Image 1 (cartoon, rainbow, N blue to C red):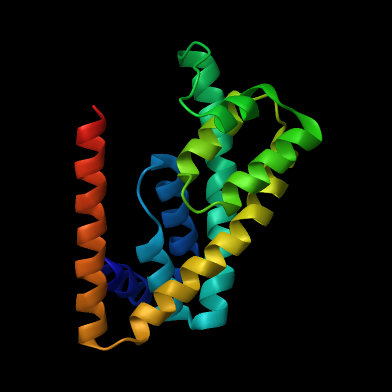
Image 2: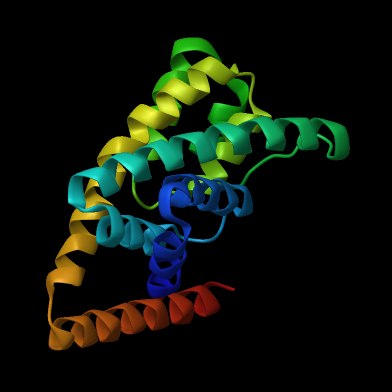
Length: 183
């Protein structure tokens, strides 16, 4: 997928940055698609520093647009929904500084899906400005870790990538097995 995105960037000239940001918005709206391939494409095409900056901007705008659209859609089409997570449920009832800290913490913590944080924020009483600032500041450390990992994988030769793929496959297999036992 990364190669396809880099091809789109190279064919679009000056619009490549806007395509990257648009893809980040779509990924954020979907809520379950990982953005790692887009981060890799940004680093590959725009270089390391520019790729990081574009990724941060795209993820921030994507979260803000998603927050706005989720909030509009949720209040119009869904009754108040409770999420299956104590911290996310707390975010739903918080506002002000407490909401800011919760969003910041959830964005920094790498195992909480970004889409769930945005959804919980949209279901909460937090205003758009608080969400935007906390979300963006919280995404920066997590994105820097992602960028570093992606950069290391891109720098590896074929063997490193095969090893990473095998490890990822095994981790996914373990998670699937554990979740099926829990049911």
